[in-house]
Length: 341
Ligand code: SAM
Ligand code: SF4
Ligand code: SF4
Image 1 (spheres, rainbow, N blue to C red):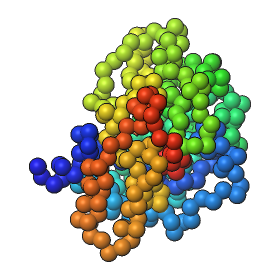
Image 2 (image 1 turned 180 degrees about the vertical axis):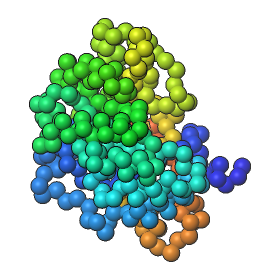
Image 3 (image 1 turned 90 degrees about the vertical axis):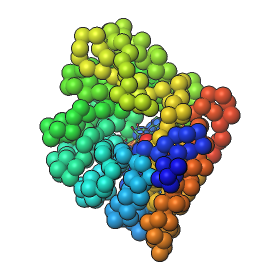
Image 4 (image 1 turned 120 degrees about the vertical axis):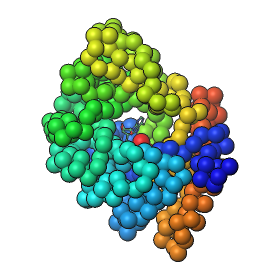
């Protein structure tokens, strides 16, 4: 078997196809389920600038990952648009041989001013996280002073410059936004042609006080929507697609369900994650990462970097969500804001 091929397959035969890159650990929101203010308060120590991978270092790593089979890049955070000149990074990554798709996950608060530049730099798609269309509810959930209207302007700007269809990620939590919010989000998607993806609230990190009883199973979400606007399951766009798709019977678009808790999809997980300071995580729920920054900042060649990354992937045996279901998952985990969703 050629080196590139063996290097891109883990212990369960899963290939390395996607890389999520966190470009900052900072955020202007304090969503309760991700960066609760009690933990991420005024005295929280975020990474210094010198600790962050530079755009050149990220691009070099992307080149190596692409040689190992990565085709899709997603930029995330923290809030990725807090990283200055993010469009420059998009432009640098977009010319890396092998990279076919670059996407961004953002809270959209800073998107209106940046959408055009990002599009011109080569960004293809954007996913906006939005959990409520009610002004007050939005403020409570995101724990931010940014008004909802600013987020909506960001979404509209993205649509206008052709970053469509826009995906809207909504984390549904029991007693928080599982009532009218859920239906309004679905309606918003139907009206504007956005694909709303309902995400099961996850036990990422150790600070959000997750309880299984707070999770609204995707099945319940589908039932609620189906009762108002009938839907039917539709096939995946490609093998291993994370979201389960349902289309509206009246032809007004589709929704996605991300069933990470009730129906884990570890078997087809082809994603690696790179933290803002250059650690490679092979699972969203990993307890620790593998330091690539030290290697990038040493005299190591690209070939050595490739060997290191391919070795890490070959040893990968992560399947946290499946283990959670069977009650045998480990407890120590990295925070979501640190490695991105
Ligand atoms: N700040 C950007 C944003 O919110 O889109 C990017 C980073 S954020 C960590 C990425 C995604 O993770 C968001 O869609 C967010 O809703 C999701 N997320 C964070 N904590 C979560 C949790 N406990 N369960 C499910 N999704 C979560
Ligand atoms: Fe910030 Fe995104 Fe986490 Fe909310 S989900 S606190 S917007 S990083
Ligand atoms: Fe992939 Fe880990 Fe999530 Fe399973 S739990 S789907 S291995 S990131």
